[in-house]
Length: 337
Image 1 (cartoon, one colour):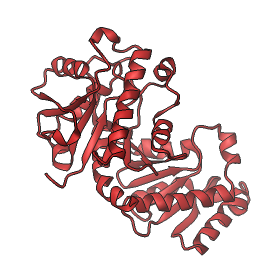
Image 2 (image 1 turned 180 degrees about the vertical axis):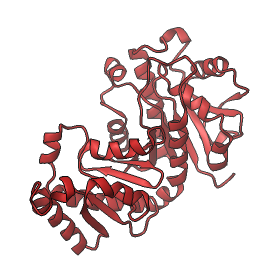
Image 3 (image 1 turned 180 degrees about the horizontal axis):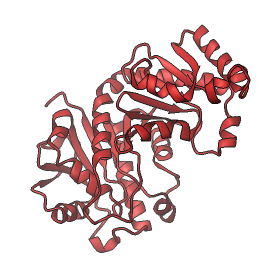
Image 4 (image 1 turned 90 degrees about the horizontal axis):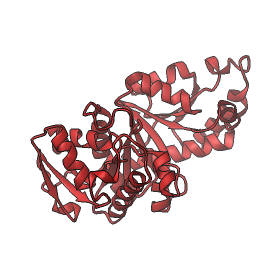
């Protein structure tokens, strides 16, 4: 028990499904065998869900993570006291109050992670509109985490089973994504990927780069980006000593990684990698933020306001996020030193 990583879990938007899936996840005995979980949220909302779900579970309020009991059927909670009563928010509705509360949970968890009082963070979903209403100066989790940690560009990695995916571009149009397939950018991402994978404990990570065009462009027949930009980037990376391969057609590269031929794939645009991960296992796909002073994982779904408070939210993604945080937390700390 002493050597298990201490994982901080933020409940996300208190009006969404975050508190419910966190409570349900912490009712799984397997979680306590791999980590010491500490919840960041509000006592009033956690007690509400313990009663709603009729759970046989104690709530242990603590000031510091190290004070947790870390026992199955006991939830250790750092109460941020953002909500005075359930009337402060309407479960299932977007509000500034809920947005502000969810941001505070993250701020406190980051503060303690930077102080090395917790080894990693697993986050339940926030609501971007609620953050905007609350005046939170960030568009999402990753941007806030980077700002609070002094990291300008954290890397996002998806993990599901043995498949790890990085993204050359994310929230841009497909046309813009194609325009971003440039030698210099690909080379930079290969270098950043290796650094990130090393931080997870991989000594010489095997990186695959996906092709952009069908069949890898067929030597220019179906597009020339592979010949013009991708292959030169890979060649230069290989000359620098990186264990990188490609471009490999996108209809096979993700399967090759899942089969452990490679440790990670560089997806060239958002949907290329998202479709591969979510088709493999939609509910168990976990988003991992790398490059921070601590490991952070997250569910890959939203606040689901339409089912919030109904007791029917599926905790699988939250369970997986906690598991992945526990998997990497200790090696990530060591490799960042």
